[in-house]
Image 1 (cartoon, rainbow, N blue to C red):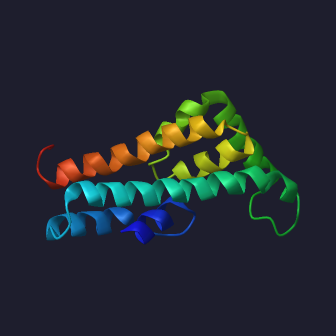
Image 2 (image 1 turned 90 degrees about the horizontal axis):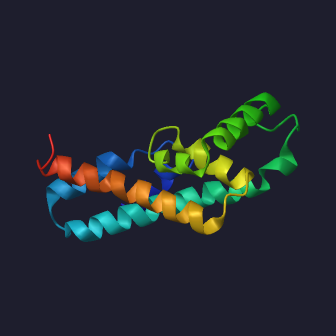
Image 3 (image 1 turned 45 degrees about the horizontal axis):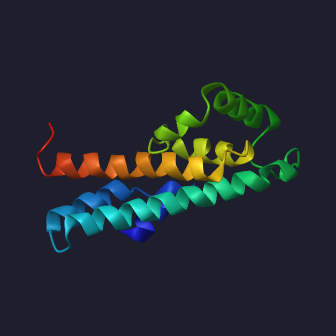
Length: 136
């Protein structure tokens, strides 16, 4: 679970929700442990994105760099416009870009960690409730 959640929070093409639901339905681990491991892995994956964002500017403009100046400017403008509260959307499919932008724009570490932890844990908690039939 940890590896799937960690990978899903980075730019790697992982889907941790499928693993989470499968493990929850199997019922071999306590739900609180599954939730904690998934959340920890997902948050740490976002921390990797944040750290990459801290060093991203030095590679800007190089031919091999996968993001154009215009794309990077757009992402930075969007994040600057919506602010650090946009990190509450870090659970969404486009959330990886938000966590990288947070690093580029030097969001305070404590704020980044708090908002991403709330978002990632909340997503798994809702998924667990839906899977258990408590919601929906």
